[in-house]
Length: 639
Image (cartoon, rainbow, N blue to C red):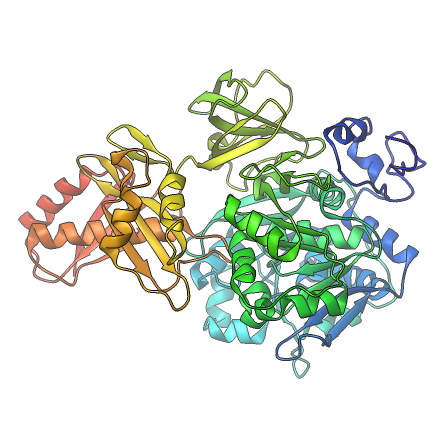
């Protein structure tokens, strides 16, 4: 690497550099060169506000954020300059600090993909703690999170507030620390967020700011939309390191335009896309308030790419597959050079087909909230990526496949040998808000220093340092002590010409522990017979134990808010089918119901039996359910 390849900041020591270091990851040696400096030396400041302010000084009038909405996806409905972005971060920070009074500032941000969702997040992180909330959370989850973090304020929209039927008095009773609720674009009320912010215009940061980059700045929920999910502690330093790494991986040129289609309550939208674009001085193009969930965004993707000069995209494989299946062709001239995918393994057919048609290699990356975001990726060396791999470790991260006893280190696996993937480095979270979850995440006894986290993924690291993720350890189907990789089932089903996507999970079994069951979504306009799908799968899986006991065709497989297939939802569906079937077989009555309580570290199953169920039948059912190892407690109740 020459001096012209890597612009090194001028300042050294404990202070951040005077400007952003820009470098693209092209080869493994680049990581070695970069790691000669501490992460802080690559950045112009030690805080999120400081780094964005540095980008604003370089180009104050440049568009930092642009938002488009259907039906006119080629004309921005809003634009925010870098100067106005910094002012909004500072004004919101002052508002949040004043709202908190003498107490800590802890602000929930529950918004769709609008600029307030990001500058409110960064303003709250500057004032104290920000807590991004999924707008799809049910009301009990919202209240549970805000109560747990002792929130002082909430920023949301009137539409979301009314959709969740929130009663102000009940809300404040259940979250006693809450002082104010602000509504975005609600100008006729005293609670309008914009009006309240503007009261602090021109003041800068008019309070003592804690600039420690390692302090907790964002508390990010991770998990489903019901119950109270785990809350991950995230630092400014961890986010900035990931943002810099992603820029080096996916593009950090100041004239870049980043397509923003992932939600801001997720590290993909807030850190990998949003923060990365802002600290590198790029333009963040928000593809409607719902991102890739807006169908017309996918339908008109190439028009948008050409019109706005998009240079970088991060999406899920399902989005890439939808683009490949549509009739629209890529324009002859466009600037899109980096298309990265996360969330699940990219199949060879998708990678090769996408390149054959559009001339762009899809490059897989991998990360998680507990690591502040993206941790591995494929460096752009101009060649076909190593398909099926999640790429190499990004700077300052170390990924190893190990054998664990619980979370106690036993040994490191040989190159290519599967094990539990663990990660060490400064991006590993300091822990969860509820410390009882920490023991299940942190690895004990690693021979290397520092914090090491158990990703929960099974995989290997090959001799060249490429990470291969085989699946979540809890996604592995354990049939009578035999481990079944669901990917083999899914690949077999996806090779059927009528199948768009497939997902295999374990269905509880009292005799085998789990049995494989598969759910499929067919391609548009296609039909298929379950028996034909089962025969097709049986002819292609390598072992008879992996043949699904059932295949269920759904109109659409459930997805998470960021477009991943939601296996927890499918496991819940399989669980409910088995439990309610057992109820009917045991007591011969219908209309039973089941719910799952996941507010604690372990799951609790509650089976509600119909009125008139005898005590003997209820006890007999309870005894049969004990044979299933899917919860720490099973509760039987009668109406």
